[in-house]
Length: 72
Image (cartoon, rainbow, N blue to C red; front, side):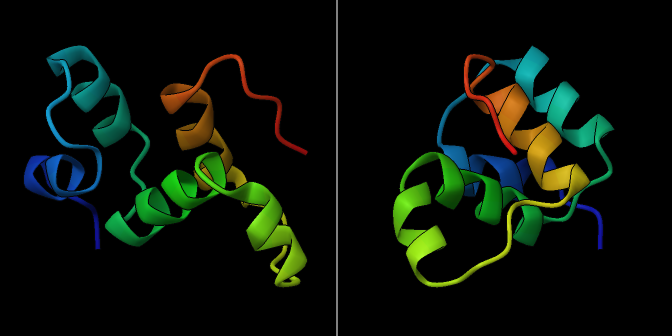
């Protein structure tokens, strides 16, 4: 299911309209956004859990949320 503006705000908190639009344009789900947020805020913990590297949409979200971050 595609996420809504409210889903994004629930994960990120207040954010600018441009970022909201860019995130919505990815077609990602709210779960993918939560996964991207988790990678940005604790990727070492996720890797030590044996989780696979982020998929394409999650990686795109990571790039939007933290353009300086290199994934993969």
